[in-house]
Amino acid sequence: MAPAPQECDLAVVGGGILGLAVARELTRRRPDLKAVVLERGPAVAGGQTGANSGVIHAGIYYVPGSLKARLCVEGAREMYEFCEREGIRHQRCGKVIVARDESELGRLDELERRGRENEVPGLRRLSAAELGEVEPHCRGVAALHSPATGIVDFADVARALAGELEAAGTPVVLNCGIEGVQSRPGRIGLAHGGGETCARFAVFCAGVGSDKLAVAAGASPDPRIVPFRGAYLYLRRERSDLVRSLIYPVPDPSLPFLGVHLSRHIDGHVSLGPTALLAPRSPGDLLWPGTSRMALKWWRTGITEIRHALNRRALARAAADYVPEIGPGDFDGGFAGKRAQALGRDGKLVDDFVVSETERALHVRNAPSPAATSSFALARLIADRAEPGLD
Image: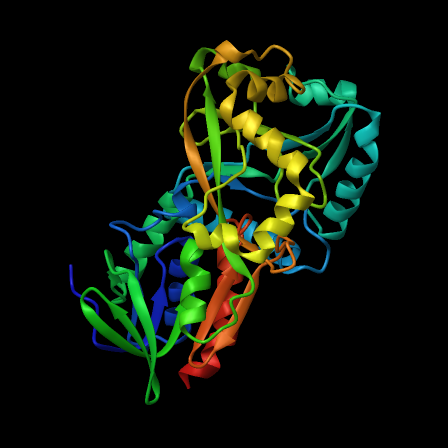
């Protein structure tokens, strides 16, 4: 593999699905660019891209008018098109969002309103009887059905993007973590183990490291990334017929998490999860003023998450709220998910995509779910803002 170049026009930091999509978008617009993708890990998609439930979201949850709402609907359509064109395994398996009892109907109404305003394709309301036709083993008083929701392995998409970039002459350099950022005359200098790459412009799509690199480039420390770790359990294969598609609860609208859900995966597994526990990178994440403020506000939710993480029976009971036939003995193995979540100094979890600027650089400061679904559409927005810096 070729080393990182000493000079280039464009450097994209981060070889996840978003960084690769940004590099693809900009080099397609400007084929004359000398560009490079710098990835700190030994392979692409080693962070959030390769550690999630693999859901192609349809755009139901997000506040109308937000970047998430607009870019998720656009991005899902383009994701399906890309997968079909490239022969990447995917499936429009659909999803139900289930109200367990009448106390959740108001929130389900609000989700339906958002989904329709966001123009989610095919969204429909289900009665209890209709829910049983879609998911025979699921129970609830009502549900929303999203037939456009699907599944894919986003790491497969990232590998296809990396292959396309390499074939077009844009190298993806692995094991190349950025250790420092310096201003150079007419350039931005990116220090790494192989020396320094000086670029006319850089785009940072660095996930869990995005805040530290932004600060190194001169940006504000607010918001800070406070990583979360999510544990998933796999349903035993012989019990997987209990779940046809994706079964989600009605989420708390004040949190950017969707709750414990049952998901089919493109490899045939069915998972339950995730839990959502802080996974601090250093004591600094815990000392960040926003962390203590968040903990004071959400301590009850935190206790529930700890109970789910420590007790398989408690997590299984969450599944039994929707699929009563599922029990603690029905699970075997699992995996851990990653979420780079931005947290403000005020203790509020940042709920939308955030892109900021410093001299000769753009920084993706918050890109949690549905960033993978939205990656092609979000890459266009980032490219629109980056192009003037390449002139």
